[in-house]
View 1 (cartoon, one colour):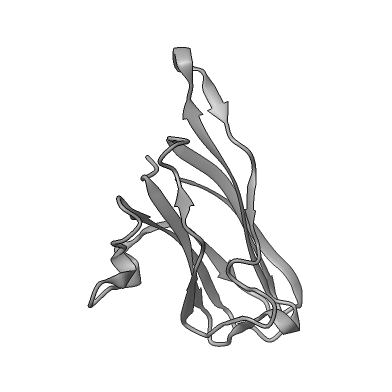
View 2: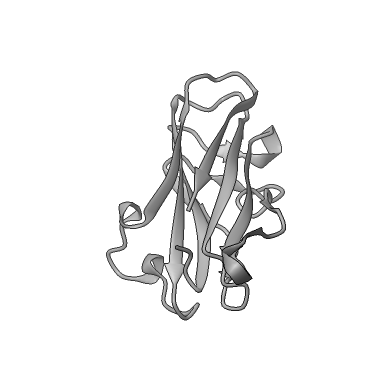
Length: 146
């Protein structure tokens, strides 16, 4: 079930950075859902977070991470979401993995990643995408849900 506030966090577990200027992209597209009156399943508007993680000239370092913007779920009261993670590499990325996590907060002030001794593995992992090539272009798309 989705929390009052949540955000995505991407971890680049490859030996080289993902460099926007060289063509790398990390894109998350998702549709939130909830149960409306009478128990009817209701889907929200599709949300696309493609520049949150790799803005122009940004880089996600090798074994580095980037967090997305906070999603305020306090009025929508969505229960879950279904989405797709797409990764485009820049042709120099080493074989490894891209991990997608969801981080939650009850007050939009205290987040697990702000705490001393935070370990990325303490978050809920939504998807791991294996990078098996150094060929430039989209190397994978994978569905996830929370």
